[in-house]
Every structure is written in C-alpha cells, then in structure tokens.
Amino acid sequence: MQYDYLIVGAGLYGAVFAQQAKAAGKKVLVIDKRPHIAGNIYSEKIEGIDVHVYGAHIFHTNDKKVWDYVSRFTDFNRFTHSPVANYHGELYSLPFNMYTFHQMWGVVTPQEAEAKIEEQRRAAGITEPENLEEQAIRLVGTDIYEKLVKHYTEKQWERPCDQLPSFIIKRLPVRLTFDNNYFNALYQGIPTDGYTKIAEHLLDGIEVRLNVDYLEKKPEYDALAEKVVYTGPIDAYFDYALGALEYRTVRFENEVLDIPNFQGNAVMNYTDAETPWTRIIEHKWFTFGGQPKTVISREFSSEWKPGDEPYYPVNDEKNGALYERYRQMAEREPRVIFGGRLGEYRYYDMDQVIGRALDMAERELG
Image 1 (cartoon, rainbow, N blue to C red):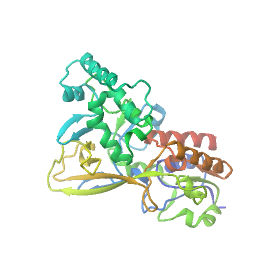
Image 2 (tube, rainbow, N blue to C red):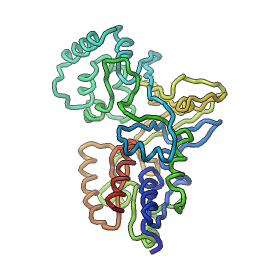
Image 3 (cartoon, rainbow, N blue to C red):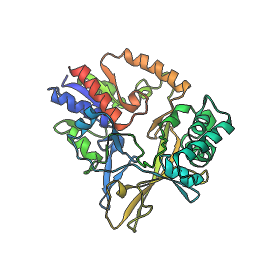
C-alpha cells in the first residue's frame, strides 16, 4: 500500500481531512471524478468576476474554531447576505424583518407587526404546526406565507407545503427589527480570491488525481491505501443495494450581460408560481465588483435523477429510514470513513462540513 489515506472527493470535507492528515505526517491521495477540485464550492473567473459555478455560497459561522481554521487559507471580505424577494414585481426584504412587514402591511412599529402576525395566526387556527405551511403561518402570518414562502418553497421541492416537514422553514430568520443580515452569524464573508483558492491551499503539496470515478475502479484504488475517506453518495457506494436515496438538484442558466448592473443585489428570490426559476444570482455583488459587464445565473430546482448532481437530501421519514439502514452497512466497513453532505446524507452549511472534517480528523489522527 502506497498511501495511508485515499480520499474520495476534493470538496471541503475531503480537502480539510487531507490537509489535516498531511500535517500529521500521513501520505495522502485525493481523487475526484470531476475535472476540478473544490467540489460544489468551485468558482471560476468570467469577465473578471468570480462566478460560483454550483450556486451561491456565502460563508457564515458562529464557530470560532472553524473560522480561525479556514482563515488560515483565505481572507474574507465583509459581504453581508441580504437577499430580496420578488413577487410579481413587488420587492420585499429577506430575512423577514420590519422592512418586510412595513412593505407588506404598512406597519411601522414592532408591536403593530406582532399584532398583525398574531391576528393571522389566530385566524388560521394553528397552535402546534404539523407541516411547513402551518409552521410558516405561525411564524409570519398568511399574507407573507402566500406571497413569499408558498410558491418559492414548492418550486424548490416540487411538493405542496402541507406535505413538507415543518423543520425546513425553521432555518428562516424572523425579526422584529430592521436588521437585514440574513444570517445570525458572528463571522461572515466571501473569500477575496475565490472559493477554489481555499481548496488549492488546503491541498497544497498533496497528490490529487482528477477525472477519476472511484466506484468504477474501486478495487484498484482501495488497494492503494490503508483507509478510505469517502465523501460521495452513501447509497452509490453500496451500489443502491437497498434502493436510491432521494435528492433535489439544481440546474443553472448562466448569462453574461453587457451592462454593469442587472439587479443591484447578489441574490433575488422569485416567489411567485409563474416564474420558473427560484432565484437569480448576480455574482459580482458578492465581491462589490466594478467590472463593466455582469454575470447572472438563473436557478431551476428539480428532482434528482442519475447523471444529475445531487444537491439537497430529501430528509423526510422515508429517506431517513433508508439512510439509517445504509449507515448501519457503513459501520461494517472498518476501513472506510463516510463523511460530508452526501456521505452522511445531511444538509450541511460550509462551516458544518469543515467542523465535521476537523472533528473526524482529530478522532482519527489523534
């Protein structure tokens, strides 16, 4: 065996574990089936603009350990995530805050906003929310639910809101202040030299092979290393022996425009049912760009099928039970560590992925 660790996947989890293993004196090989490193955080320059190829990524965390670690490999700007919702040309602030409530109802005080939400909550008769629709109405009332939550969410998941679990909407902050910062995070920003550079710095001095499909050459690659860190889909690792887990995927339509400013904001969500895309990203505003042109990406959500890139696990009861059976199979693979969003079938933010990789490296490497 030539390596201590074979790491399958050059995304954040794999790159962080690789860096930690190398720092511990281990010999590491990283492989990835894509033609590039960095996984879904991969970015590339178009017209001098750093474009997030696999969708918008805004780094945010309250974990100082993670922040201090990732700051060793990049500098961050002061970008604050403040998306805008577009409902048939009506614009509303996100997250839901006093600007949103004023735009929706004309209220000017927190007391008026709270009273309006309570009035609509009572009218809907919701006490213990049993699904996303009821949870959203309980949080923000029926008007905001109908205009800013319902259709956007149903485009994302292709399921009625009353058939989606309530926890999905709990990620959305609701504030009775004029704070337009979407994240309640102590640390936040965009890498000044792009996300790909983080992966480059993490993998500095480590052997990386691209355009390699591990599952097609599994015995060959397994023979190279003492242990495997696998960050691909857990069901694919077991050749879908128990059936396929469900994911949502995203398709992007990118456009270079010969104008300096398309929408004046990095992220605009389209919350009506008629617009086919969920949101438009204008990449230059992540780095306060002054380029003469602009690049936009329209995002379209759909059900995952083989050949698509899996983005979001469908963490409902059925898929949770199936994943648990795969997890038990994974425990019987003593040479393999399953990690990351796909290996653990969980939605993780970037800081959570880094934290999970650091914790695993600490347990594994001592």
